[in-house]
Image (tube, rainbow, N blue to C red; front, side, top):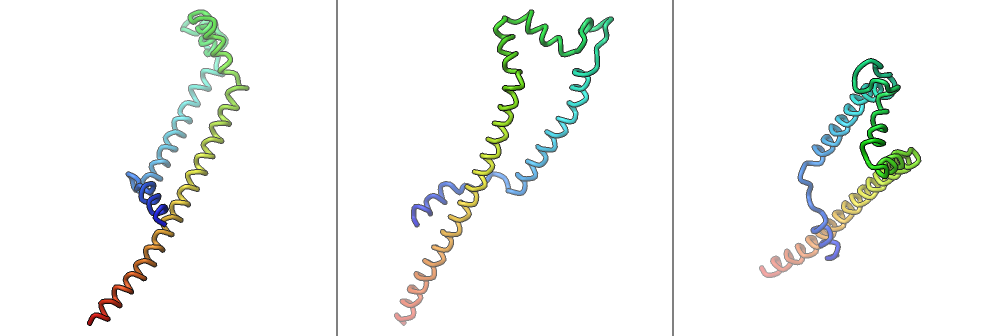
Length: 149
């Protein structure tokens, strides 16, 4: 019982913010991330699908705007950097990495919930032990004070 009490006292640190405020903060951060994603869609669509002007501008003579990136990697950087960037941008590497990130977020969320439930159980046990001790010791203290009169 004392070990559990010590664990609750050491590990059960109150949050800096109120729980409801942190939950709404997460909601607003998710909304901002979603709006950022939506605002980048027109620019990405323009870069990927619309052909640039052939007469003037930095993209003249290119069929797509993103060809400038590969051309810059080939001519302005060392050859090994272009190879590393080419391997790193391979969909066979990016998709498993994204899947790994999603699974790790799911795992961390699940362990966080289980720790929260275990913490609540420890609180309930500690409260019930305190109530029992208060009942037992309070009752004996009351009996002593009554028997002394």
